[in-house]
Length: 629
View 1 (cartoon, rainbow, N blue to C red):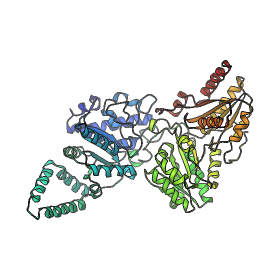
View 2 (cartoon, rainbow, N blue to C red):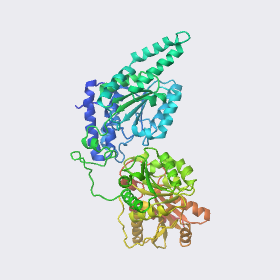
View 3 (cartoon, helix red, strand yellow):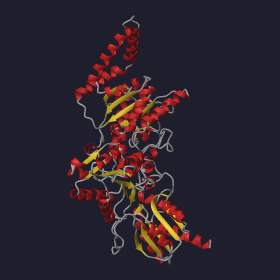
View 4 (tube, rainbow, N blue to C red):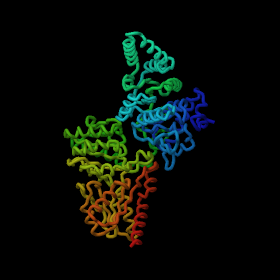
């Protein structure tokens, strides 16, 4: 029986000897590589944190102790050690294990987590609540070096320093290089500085010096200054100590005996501490070590070659955006591009190569990205801020206060909108129409295909009346189903009628236009003749067209890949109500709930957003209306 097969809980792990733990780490890496190669997932970050996760579960006791994972995309080892080994093959599959922490999956997961910067705030809340309720237990927050670009982390650390509660922050640094000699010195110092003997001597010595009449306090102050100067000269922790943390590190994050010894000592302290470890992203798999960005969120791949398994390379909206922006930037020197640690994911890699002085990666700092764009725009530049829909939510106030209120023509590229698939609850971009569509001065568009995306990008470059948001999905570009369909130029607030009909009107937008074209053709064969409109704009709506159509029919169907609340259907219903238009409106959209993980096609089918399901739902709705008279 392998070591991993013997582990069904952290209690089983504690029965292993320290000498057996490196072997367990190797088995865990092999299992992670095997499953991610088949299912896709966050490979590099998970391979880098195996030893730390083992050590935490080896030392901590549950449920009294708590581990909080910042971002949450590094919990595969955690899942394997906490009773989910038998289901690990279902990782990121429909109705299978989530790729992130999920409290509904396991009591070992306090929260559902998918956005960066939350762990220390949560840890402080748990630590204070535990103290108020007189509960014992260590609270540990594991953050990555990328999280240090998130303002919320420093807000939380500042607050921790203020309250000085008993919690441990582990900084997993997989970017910083560390020389061998520095490691030796640091490892030695941390053994000393974290040991109970050292800390007891320090406390006793402080008390002794304080007791010296008249000069005790002065001598202690000088001694503490000398102690800090020497320590900060040798250890790069002055910054964290100034925030109120005891700092230990940097440590080799793959050295299990060293981690166990240091963490055991640190867990005996009762003050805010930060343990800084250095790890290798992708450790144990050659291709992930060499190309950590490529294997950050990996597609299924061949283990032997490291090549992604793709049926056929289809161009995505994201790729087309990147190519088009480079073309536009050659024509217009005002154009600059901003991303929040997602250069590859937002399609801006090529832009950075061609225009390095006009490309800005601000790190995981969406709020800063937006307000930074306002400064660039105020000086006459044309910023394109490319951020995933789910992450743009983090900058809600900055969009309102620093962009819309100022009437600045910043362009927001809202990628990965709608259903993104296997990343699930925290990453589905299904609320952007709602939060962007109610902001004054904001223009919101969604393209039906690649040609329309290019046209909308050109429209946005020339639009100077205020901010523009262009929303598109994480999917390949659709192949035009009806080549002869005329393409109307993008004009502010004007929709595009794709088909005339007399029985009902289908109002579709963005990624749902092509499924709606297919549905309309099938409905026609069943005897229902529908007008089909590509709305293009969520805001402003084409109210002139809606009024005109309402004079011909009282049957309207809106279709969108967005939450049913606050999107296109809501906008149309509000317009009809305000104008006193008595029309029946069937809204076909995602339910107002957090949507689970699974392949995008599976989720769209489950929630009725394929052409087949649209035909069925419209047929049922028409039948109910006819039956009601």
